[in-house]
Image 1 (spheres, rainbow, N blue to C red):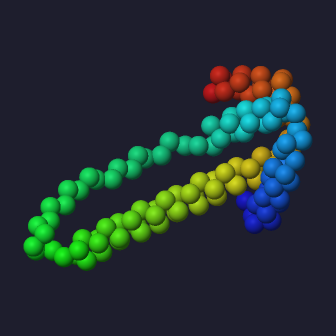
Image 2 (cartoon, rainbow, N blue to C red; image 1 turned 90 degrees about the horizontal axis):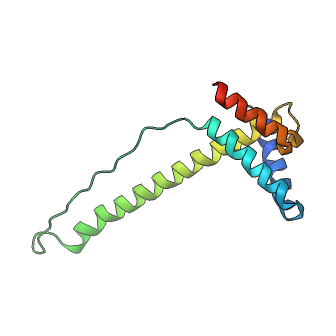
Image 3 (cartoon, helix red, strand yellow; image 1 turned 90 degrees about the vertical axis):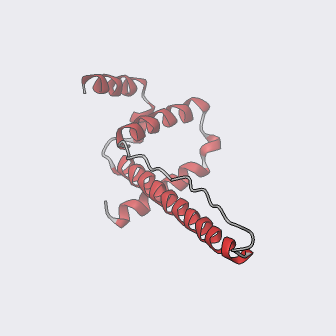
Length: 127
């Protein structure tokens, strides 16, 4: 997917979000259901990440406050960076999915059609 497609998807998504309050509740529910189906197809199982519990045993006489604060600060900064990275990855995946849905030849109104949902469910059962 190229940058122009992703930018177009962002613009369309922004326009839809701005007018979200004007849409009927049934329409927003059907759009949410269609997006959930698309997300369930996109997401692949990820390997679980484990963080090891580490017990720190310091004697007050051997280490000063700075000796404890620096590793804790590094840990907090590292975890914050990891969180930001994961959030950016999630946003990029959602943007790619939104761009794929919006760039598809299928009109957006098809996602609102009850028959389309039945078709998707029958396709899932066949797979």
